[in-house]
Image 1: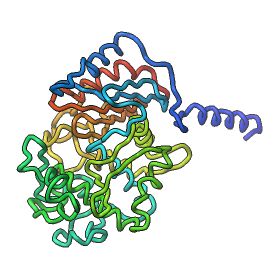
Image 2: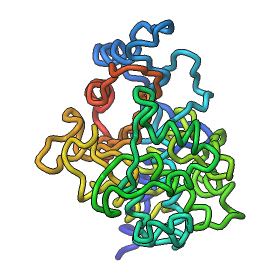
Image 3: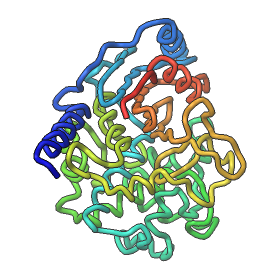
Image 4: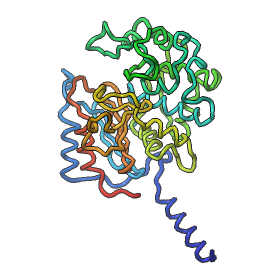
Length: 364
């Protein structure tokens, strides 16, 4: 190869590297979108806020990253850009991401029995880490909320009988199916993963591990993650991040686990997170389960859950309208925090309107 051609290739590589945006202490910004499509989106996401009855759509934050740049954000209610917001079940996807770092360290395999790392599961010796990641433990868990508190396993776990040791509470449930054979959404499964992580990385590392493994490498400075009385992170529910910080996790996942020059998550881990659980049956839930993430995939003869978004869209979702949508094909990460107390909010509608306002022409 001639010296001139070598220099041209080096220049092109350098220009390509500079074109890829990554947040430093702050997100790089681009001019905000304007126009009718944005107005329609804002009318949907930020209607007059009813704080007396808490009815209707009550968006606390809406933030959009495109091509690694912050192009839109708006806040309402008590939430600001500096507010670590309760993420509820987005915490599950965060724990899956933390586990991905440990997986990359070679500390476990997906088919490892959970019993290896959490002896309280002696009643369920064949249950694997992959089963828990798919919400397919087979444990007879009832994921009801405030609308059926007396039947709710998760209410009992978080607030009454199980709150001191959430993983042990879950491990005591009997089976309704063999592990890995059926999907049933379970906050208990996620807290068993958190308990297993304690021995996967070792108790000495565990208390700081989400920070050293994930938050600090991504530049997340103000995360809060509550534990139960045993010091186990409540992976089902109690992580708090600002919208800007949560979007960093979204960008990591959009770029297949790479952060700058570092492959923080193995690519095969991200691929596992984004692959539908093989035994999921259509309409068992409002989206398709992957590895503690939610997918917009057509499975079992059913249409995509969010028909107005690309099939590669995936999301971390939480109670009362918490959502982070990742659309790799359009280089978009959308964070939406809310305080919705009814069923007014619709994922597909938000995605449809946001794509109309922000998708535009994206870089390869």
